[in-house]
Image 1 (cartoon, one colour):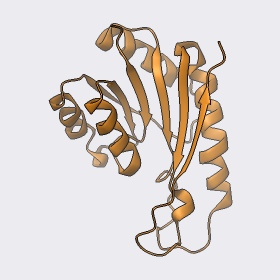
Image 2 (image 1 turned 120 degrees about the vertical axis):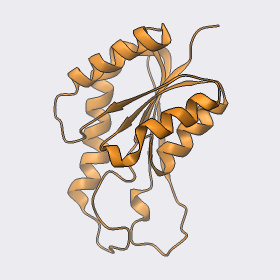
Image 3 (image 1 turned 90 degrees about the vertical axis):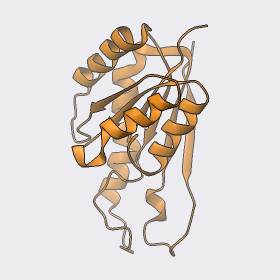
Length: 164
């Protein structure tokens, strides 16, 4: 059996955190990202490892335009920690990436475009060489929920399959 490794952007909060735990329970190893230490990446890693798989958390600055250095970090983590050379999946969780307060009614359209178009494009471009031929790129975002009534649970989800 080959090592199944998923990269989860935003693995320490919200939908990304839930996705990381769900995949870990299904036997996937996890490379997760975080923006700041307040997101408790070490605690999330331990929780994932408690489920019987390995985890690595990498810091990712979502404002970067050149994500090749990040892709190199992911590649090194794949080789060193998981003894693998390909990612099974890339899950891009962009729901909490903007600083717009959840109660704000007006959506920051520039942030929405940056997080749901620019970031997925740059990430898939930088990581395409280490995504398995049958690998999926999954974009999830709860950003569209902002300003809706409390308790709303809509989620944008788009899956792209790498052409072989």
